[in-house]
Image (cartoon, rainbow, N blue to C red; front, side, top):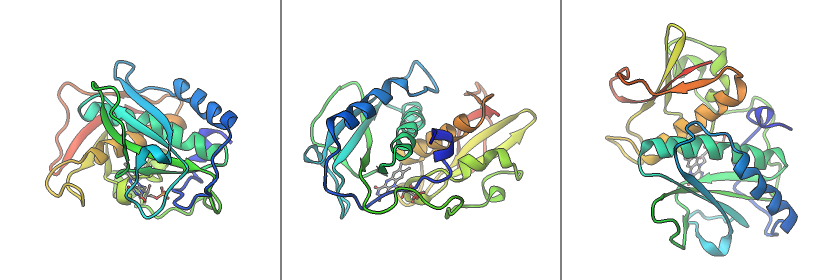
Length: 236
Ligand SMILES: Cc1cc2nc3c(=O)[nH]c(=O)nc-3n(C[C@H](O)[C@H](O)[C@H](O)COP(=O)(O)O)c2cc1C
């Protein structure tokens, strides 16, 4: 299955078999990472594959493997990390593995001092089905995430987000669509948390994979929307 089709059946797996993946399978996953498409080539990010002995996971479950994710300081680094590593989430599920973004897991070691630790992707063989039945998503409707019901946004609508908050909001403006992230939420009631920016990158990744003409830019004079932050302007 390709990454585009995986968007519509992916889900978070939180119950894993204890067994580790073979060296060959891990090498295959490692090989996928350099081929990940980038939103902005100039931004540095890093993904380190490791096992459970290397990670503090505060969830009441564990996974045999983790991809620990890093990016440059600031919101653009976080958007980039979400955009790039959502491709890894989809890849893992496309090869039949279970995966889950993990905001509160932490790598025990300190690595590249120029990069900030973002979060982890837990992965391994799922205890049950690693996918959902097509279309079975608990998500907002297209009219709740956009100023216009626009079927082209469906892949963003079903994207995963921290606490399933789905903070994205799309506003059409002629040929382009502005993306905003809603401030607030459980982690940062008055502002923006780093998860908000990761979520924006994930939604952009789903739109990139489902639209051949996708392009993204940050406007010099960004539109302003009360209660939201601007996260970029796209063409589909
Ligand atoms: C940035 C981010 C952080 C997340 N952190 C956690 C986490 O710490 N623990 C967890 O169980 N799930 C976490 N999730 C998974 C979300 O809860 C999940 O994606 C969302 O509820 C939608 O469900 P689905 O992935 O099955 O479609 C995270 C997701 C994202 C995108």
